[in-house]
Picture 1 (cartoon, rainbow, N blue to C red):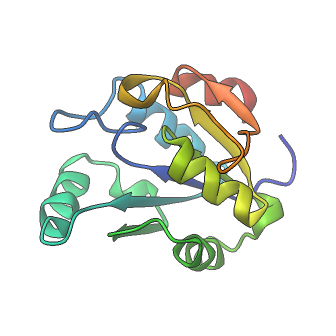
Picture 2 (spheres, helix red, strand yellow; picture 1 turned 60 degrees about the horizontal axis):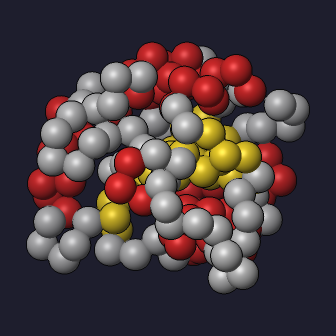
Length: 149
């Protein structure tokens, strides 16, 4: 896939199984992609839960592979724009990857970024609609990224 400079990942449901651990392929995928692209991570945490989310991310062993990491209460387009700036990419050269159409895919479409919807887990049936727009790609396994990127 040409012209990609930055990739922004969601955390829970994409790289990390809620209240458990990394998904089996997360480490390998992130390690391989970090050799080619600037990676960012944006995760939501409820007010007061930010510290435990930072700890969770820190304990994963993935932090060295991300150029930027954000933990916020809402996935606002402004946070993605700031992340893209730090990744030295723009909407045309950034891919957003997540498991939620109402958050990850919606923001990607609002910003004009390409997107990968990881359709698995608890939000696999949260289908794209007029509000979210369609994802650029739909995958069922994180490792599928390595076939395309």
